[in-house]
Length: 252
Image 1 (cartoon, rainbow, N blue to C red):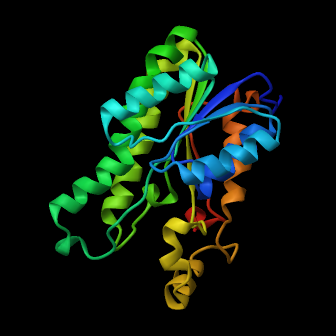
Image 2 (cartoon, rainbow, N blue to C red):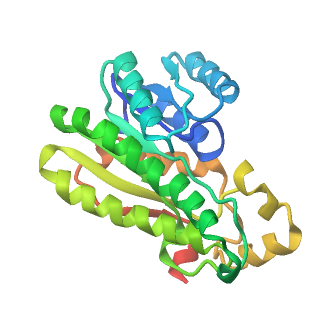
């Protein structure tokens, strides 16, 4: 089975940094032309330059995909600019709240759900007609190991990531006979800018690392290989699965 993506196209949301940027470069190195999305343009322009240095095309499509109209426009621009869409990586996510559930305002809960779940729904609904009409494609929903166990202090984040696993399985079954595959990539603790406050805090970092059998956090680049596997023909008979990449944390 081939990991080669020559002649294929990919759209990656949340691509400006961290896991999204690492996945973008991995897909480009494998031969894909890419459309890259995030809210800001500057970091996307820098990433596009790296993609172009690899000899691949890069469309820069800044948009806030928590807005359904913006998401639809962005997906349409990606399809129009690339000519088609073979791979879709929904990577937008995060959490602005860390603390006890009892102290959580409902507006904070809604904010996390909007960022992690609604954004994915908007992008997938916008891309679905194109993918289903073509009868092929690989959708990768970036969830988290937090979907599978307790995450005290991060209840909205864990719940939102669990919702993405359920969505992944439902769409995989709905779309299985069409040729469109849907899988989830579930990173463990990964040292990205998004969670810098956690891995730079020595006490918190030590506590979280103690739960990882491999004894360290992942780098964003260590999520790129699993994403390439899901995007390529190497996983051609795989759909509805949650690929956990967490240094053994979920096995404990």
